[in-house]
Image: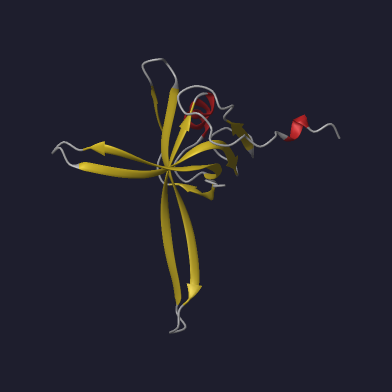
Length: 141
């Protein structure tokens, strides 16, 4: 058995870039920064920021483009994917990114509700590698 699950909570490093495939399906790309801090052996506070490239498909990509902006806090559930591409010089390059199945908007701003949850239903260009978690509204109690 193997598992490929990524969960990232942080702040957007740039506004989402939304494009459309030839078939008309939306795809959004943005980066999320996560921070960690610790006290080093010398007693000084150390800090590191890690940047995560996020790819979102379908209706939730459109929602991300509409409601998210640089600095906005977000929670992303997805899977890690590495893809190969060729640069202008013919050199092979690799990009590792998180393909989101679920995006939750946290905090305020952008005219959105304080917290908005958008979830991929697993259709279209980017098939889901694991089932999407249930939405709370579906629980009968």
